[in-house]
Image (cartoon, rainbow, N blue to C red; front, side):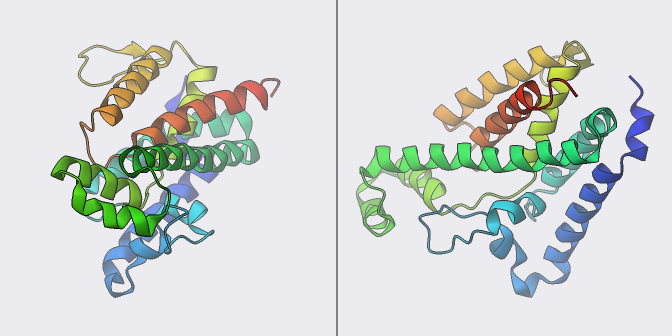
Length: 229
């Protein structure tokens, strides 16, 4: 496998460029609150707009620089191989469809958390219930209801999932293991770790189910749609 072919991947380069431009714009034009406009809010939230289903994939957290760095690095490393293998059109289908499905996974999880705590899907009623919860429950409920999704993690995870389907034995490093692991095994470990983290809220603010949903979406999209590419 030759990673030098990644430099010739047009779609990957354009996606990285757009993400960097939008990230830069969030600083240069901070007065317009681009993050708030492009991020994806819960569909039951008044701030939800249909276009956010796509635009949230191009905006990253201003407070966490590694957010965009890791996403773009993963997109470059794995995306070039998938684009070279399948072509631009199929690559973009995997990328955007995985991103949409990943968001759907996370929304389902967030909705389940909200219903678990307050037994309602009415945002107004749920907001009033915040006063009757302890601090941990408030944080969990508030993040599920009001924290918008942003970043290309779901779409990029889909590309990694597709990569695992075509190159399951390719070795990659995954923390905290100090040795390379076959990508398919690494993703299984990652999915299990993400499930544990989401259930016990070990990493608040991270859309674990978007990562899981993206990986599974990319893997099964190529399994069923592009298996005879």
